[in-house]
Image (cartoon, rainbow, N blue to C red; front, top):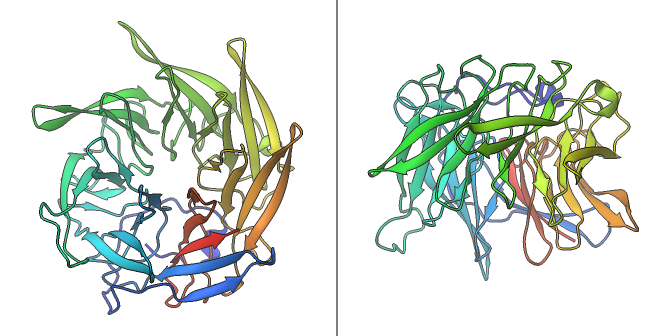
Length: 419
């Protein structure tokens, strides 16, 4: 589903996937090195998606493993339903390999979310479409049993659950999260008992997985959860909804607490009431060591916010963004936090050229300073345009991410930003 440039002023509501013809060029290493506006800082394109077997339009960001390799997904390309890929870090640079091509039909298709590592070390993710009922699926991807010298050796995919599109939910958009017991949690952007989405749990059982809906959104209690959920140390879940809340339109931040004998109960931490405090949080939440929650809104000119727990309640603060604007240029992906407490992210249409930017929120003397680290170019031919996802941070402070368009073939890129 490749949208025209004009459609990327806001994150598109996904539709059914469409095939993109395959083309040559499945392994492409870093091709471009660009000087950032910050001087010595540089952005390197690690891979240009051709739209063929390597995929196209990576709406998701990348996941780092312990060796610094990158894993991600594309919503299009491959066999028509998207691709899971790996970028391996070697002494000579980066090597790209597609791990799996989704075929649609009963297979999963159109992964808008990234992949995560499960307790067994394999990859887990969701797709917006595909599965038995073509309403989306949860999948697992395992490497070959025997190590192969061929980087293109296929991985083995298994659909763990296919959504029916009814009370169990429909069209999961976000990544999944595991608890300490190996249960998997996620959200669906629609369906459920009342229609505007669910929070679900998949529990391993007798060699398979059992799905249960642990919460149904209804509108007043939130609607359209496009973000993932995260845990705190006590086992509570936190997330955002794109719409709904007390006003019914601008979205909310919620908490789910498990009560023995009762189940999961929701409480609102904050409801966005008008664009002046931000609106439409596509992004999920990031939690620091003190239990503070950080997030971002897409509309209202984009707001970065903090929720601080105090005596059983939560206090909302806008850290950056004036709100009230009509141009949605905030961060659509979740923020990432470093050891010093600084926040990093990407905006989809901000920056000097209106095609997206990489930013840092620096925590100094109890306050916050916003810095644009890099602005993507107007054409994006050499660096990409419209980064829809959040960024990943390695141990050396390097940032990694994707753009859904631009690059050598116009189908998006994977990039590295070196401070």
